[in-house]
Length: 416
Image (cartoon, rainbow, N blue to C red; front, side, top):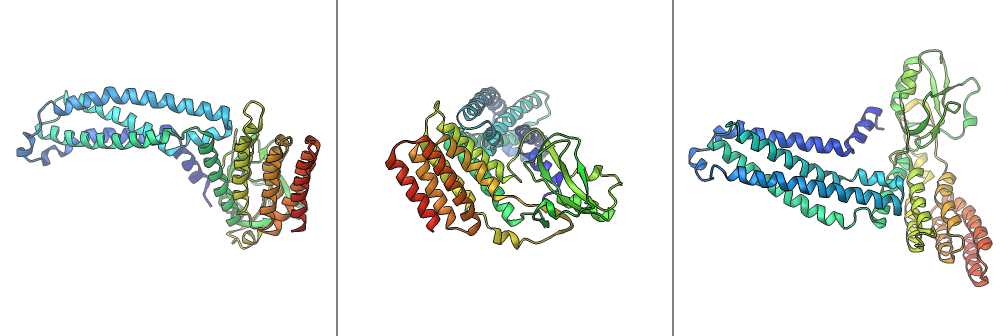
């Protein structure tokens, strides 16, 4: 279980400016280290390299890296815009966290700063002839790093912002979030099957912040509960929209003590994240399919592909594995995730927007049939959504043969 501070550091590490600053600091250090190492270079080696060789190369690097950085930024902005228009604005945040893009921009900016600082130091006479040898060798290493980065960047540009690549990223996030949920469905706390299981003497605790819950630090809640001899029943999960009237948790014990530290275990912001929220990943996948099914895009093939992606994610659901999860925080009870909500988030928009298209509903019915064979939990939800999707198709389609095909698939599911 990642603590709140660890989770915030993880989010910070995904910011573009953090990696860029880190590369820039490394570049400054590389330029300055030549001053410290220049006394280690033999005199015989110092005469091999011309006095102005390093400065000429650095001047070329400084001018070219500025142009490459500007070009890369324009490509990145264009990819973000294309993703927003053709995929989903929620998926664009994944592109902004793309490590290859961040490494490329950070390398280009860092190389530019390295060149500028090195030229300044050369003109301050801090480098001896031996120091210029160190700087020259460092510059060669920087050039090699730039070449490798440019090759990786060019290859990456072919897929940046495209529907398939962005859908891959969303699927991977949803897949990882659901796998993490199955492994730790209650985040290490005691299972809370339903809010009706909360003791009658429990007192509600609301937040004064309105927004989406991004992260819950169960470890910090358990530490507070132990210290104050309380039992805490957490009735929300990451992805829930918190408001002033909705309790985040219920307390059994002396709830009159300060609960500010308890509320600080919840990270509440303006938008949802993928890490602890499997429903959000499935919702974004459904958004991609819905946009593909819109009259403006009219791309049922993408929607069919998304159905397959969602089926792959849902195939990881296992209540049996979840029931074997260990309890690490004995003073906290955590409400679980409802599988029916995940099915509703993903399949309902696709069945609604693809109602007139028989190919979409054939793929949906086949997906329900495949999911039903995995375990009883998935079978129950698959049958429910199979009936709902069939009803939508019958209402929107008029061709008897198409409807007969869908009815046959639906019947096959219920007979399985």
